[in-house]
Length: 466
Image 1: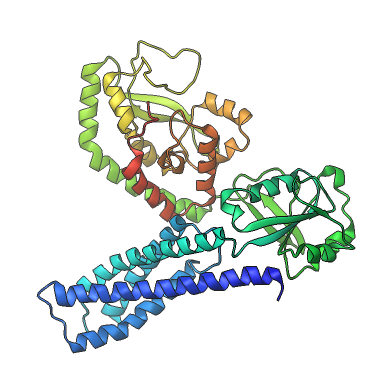
Image 2 (image 1 turned 45 degrees about the vertical axis):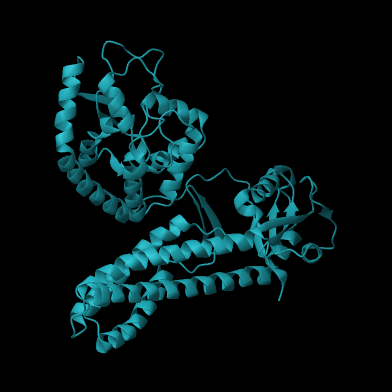
């Protein structure tokens, strides 16, 4: 077996086995812990040998169902950059699916009525235990990767900026433990990496003991020999990548075949009708709930604004949402009306003299934003999405920041992925754009729910909100 197969396959087998053992132990622990608490601790303890035998048999169903749903939600796919947060979202789906499965099994396919208390406790404990197990697994994987046990040797082929950028990316913290650039073939512009001579690409791969081959040429070297392309296709035992000379794709790329012609689509990620329908349904339900729940705050805040400063209670301002459409965003007025803005559109700064005393509290706690639930209900905004900017600022940022306009693929939101990660107000705009584009690329209903939860945990009060 070659080095590449050894690295990739060995890590894949190790990762799968570790996760499988962890999931099996954790779901059985959750099953029997909830059974013990229900029948021997709570509700006067009604356990007996019959119930113990029955629940022991049913534990096999819990185990099989857990493994099945984890497989469906792609929790066993090899990934050297495992993300515990992403896995947590998938484990929520697994736990909900497990709960629904047992509800159906208990009450439609099973003659005996099994304890509902046990079922509820198992639903909660299975998620907690599985999530803890995955966290431990990822710590184990990270320690092995950091030790260099699964590090792949990379051979760079060609020259140019793309090759240098790729090499620099391998030096980042997330990649340094799994990728090691060992040599460069047909080029020598990567400092610190030896350039090797070989009869052909296969010979270069053998000399470098490469697991991964990365090929790229800039415009000055666009006439890459046909033999190199052909030889690259013969390297079936190595991972082979071509770095295309294309602009950066901000919201994802897709490679497909068009009548056997390879096509690479850039900035391809978009919301389908089904996704938009789900998101809009969630927006309507959540905005109605928010308006009803916060109705006392609307009244109190309106009174405070009216008695402490002159002017209207609500403040309307033009903002930009999906497809560049301009709408009037609603906010509780937090500034004096007798001090107009100076110097054009700009963000509010710390100790801004225009802000009223009540307004300062509203801004710090984000309570000035709650009228935007009406924007969500009317369809001009979404509950979750990139924060909207003023048209003048959008025009400016589109010229200054590559990919800025891609954030308008979705509706603007009251809260967003950037905000719950600390990027709101007068913070790095580039970082905010990165988080917004991540949200667009990776949107799921579960991500929206996660952002809602994080907004309540740490999104309302923020040191950067002035």
